[in-house]
Image (cartoon, rainbow, N blue to C red; front, top):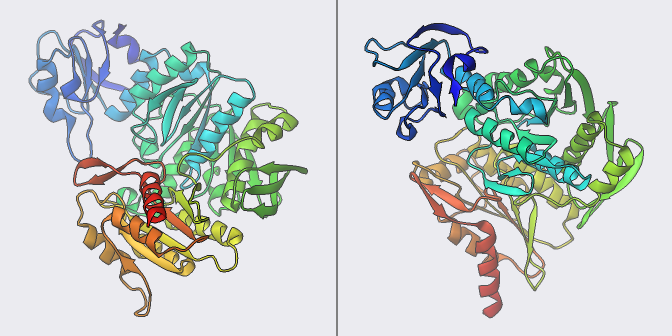
Length: 486
């Protein structure tokens, strides 16, 4: 238990009503989860306003309420705290409630559009291979040392973040590698955390349904680096034109990486084969079990981070040569007749093109390529026709299908995708994703390639407001087996 007054030391308080010496058991922002002695935060969200649930939280036993508008009617024995921003206050107070665990870790934040999950996960794998205990907070999974925890968000809320980091410290972790989404940055979920460094991968078209403009999306990412203090480091990819923009106002020590230009950390792809690449990183050659220039950037980023964290070059490169790809990222499934299905999370235009370019580099003469992809519902509509154009550019056969339609009509999403395509464009529209996968397998011949893009590691489809079990990998294996029987 902590006294509410102790937790407010890092938060700008406008006024209080009640006893700030009151002790609280937990920090809660969902009134349905409030228990006796808890502190309830009235968060102003996009769909609901927590101020409407203050009385409900108090009725459930809340001992303190943090809000942006002090209620006129206040219950006896409850401490009310008015602040300018309850999101920020929640983050500050969560860090204090758990005794600032990030200060006891070397915490590295990874931000950008594509490559965050791969970079964070490979850093976790690398440092574990180097003999360190580490934590991971990513889209696919959270890890506390070797213990796996289900991931609910790319970057979870401030309470869960600090709780997990306190557990990481208790488990002997020295490092934590964390994806920092643009949503989490602007919603101040990572406020109050002490970062040792930050990594920027790239910035491309995504999340404009939330940020509205690309300029606002860029500003959200840049804010992460603006907030890095002196004594930290920022590693940025300067082959992305926004790389230098990210660190214009940072107080961190800036280091650059590139595959094309002079930089602090350099990499060149010497050779690419179906089972890996030969890279030259800072003058040393290393064979890695990854494909594609985008993965060369990811690997260079983890190398640069390791160098900034004081690791030895030879040990890092040796460990990198043994790393494996992340679940749902260029994940291969091969049929007995040599047909290859590649499952990848690519759900932005840039990510899809990167994967298709990589497939093009390893594709043999006569191999036909079928691309299955869709676009999420209730999300950025502007990227839908661009995704379709990119699929048609590389595929022999393009199949457009569902990808988490949510509350939108899947057929309406498909109409958006094909709008403006040339009249002679050849593609199939199959809203049922299972049927789309089955059709892709049926149309392919021995030795062909099928790309299933958009779902990657996900094992569900969001249809309406329900999560329904669906796994591209399961579906393609079932259809490979069925084809073998015919």
